[in-house]
Image (cartoon, rainbow, N blue to C red; front, side, top):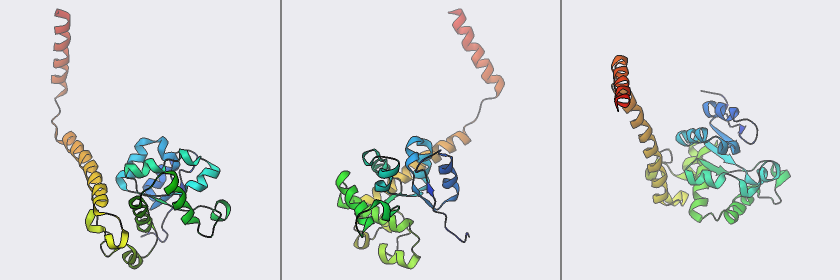
Length: 208
């Protein structure tokens, strides 16, 4: 019900606290470089599929060399990343700065056509385009997860890639749910019984 959609620059540099705040409040973020130093927070961003719009060429000039960017690691792990521009008048050299980001990333990180299409699909999904515009670019079922939400005629992303991303994410969530339910339903021993067991073990050690 907010008037504005919160999409802050976060995690480009500085302390990771602002990434935590953005995780709780933001629709998606820009940069997110500091996430590589905080694996637990990175995992939360993965579970919630918070959008991360990264600008490696801009980062290369200001904070982090291109070959040290965490972008390929984020993408391989399944975080909801896409490529974007930042200060294009300052850091880009053509009239198509976003094409520069894609072209350089494809060459340096050996991204496949499938990778490029997935990144473009992620970009539209996390954008502020209207529902109608997203349907035009991604298909009428884009809100669905997995293969159901992937219109290959629109996105050019193979269904096997969409299914892999979805199934991996669901499996991860299931592991957490299973661990939580096991902890909740597991009967805890009364303190007195637990103390008696520990005392018995000590007696065995002393007698031996």
